[in-house]
Image 1 (tube, rainbow, N blue to C red):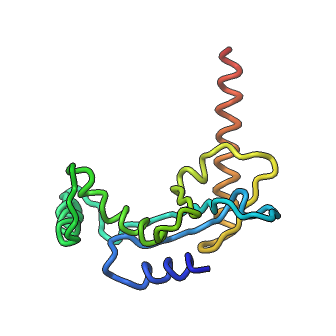
Image 2 (cartoon, rainbow, N blue to C red):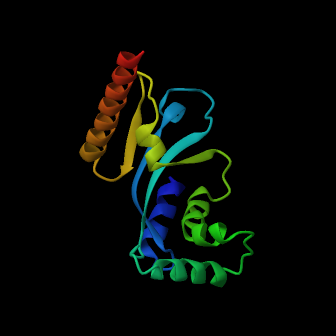
Image 3 (cartoon, rainbow, N blue to C red):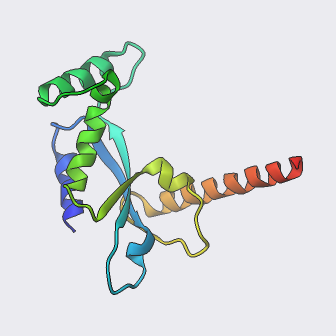
Length: 148
């Protein structure tokens, strides 16, 4: 899969201010179909820059944005550029790839027949993380039901 080659490229290069810690594919891609639709991929990014109270990371992210030669309409866009840059490399202008945040992947409500495949990361840890998120959702749902 070209996608995983791009993951390896990002992780091998210090040019990028984020690395990719975990990748999972999920959704209709894993179901047998004649025609392939969108491939849903969850990606967990980790900053290579220490996020500290001194806000040096802001200067580093901003400098990285300026050095990219791109124009940004807002300060937020500048600061977010290192993350977006990695996502753009991963997507590689492919409309058939839908990249989701790791948080969304973990926290989304899942159908009973939900399937996923871990491409990068510890599958057992990811399974435990998903189970814990499901347990919390069920507790919250029960708590809301008791209030009604």
